[in-house]
Length: 219
Image (cartoon, rainbow, N blue to C red; front, side):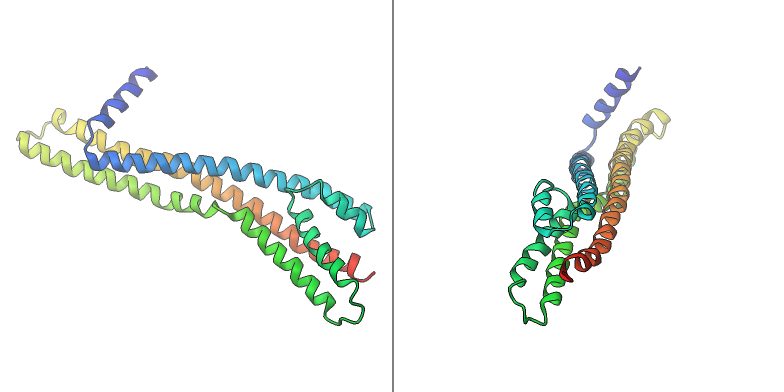
């Protein structure tokens, strides 16, 4: 039964007009790209959260910045270790400037720049999922409307409005709407999940910055 349904869908797509086929091609490309981005960002965010948590445990265990910097080198994918390294490097360059009254402000600025860089790194390509989720149903609807228009034109040419004459064209047109939903739903779900997880990481970074400042700049 499933094979027969698949064959019918393929035959409907093959019998569609060039505009509908173009719409379906765009939606299929969007769907493939969305799944690739979801898989890539899911792994990236998961590694970031895992390594950040392990590093955070080490942060509260080791009080010497040098030792903690060495430990952070083992967590290249974690957001917290990356921010810590940026702050530590700036901290190391400013330690020799004993009389610099703006030392703390410069280190905080370096840490904030690292936080912003992490936010950009994690959110890179995620907005594309929102774009697919918002536009794919309308692209599919456009293909459906165009297919229905073609069907009515064929009805006029055939001079017959029977169900047998109308149904094939309508069903072909509705494939575009279905394809748009198939592309949009995973993209929206992936976008919501990734946005939530990235937001959690960003909150952890915001909480980490004061701890870093208090632990090492006041030494």
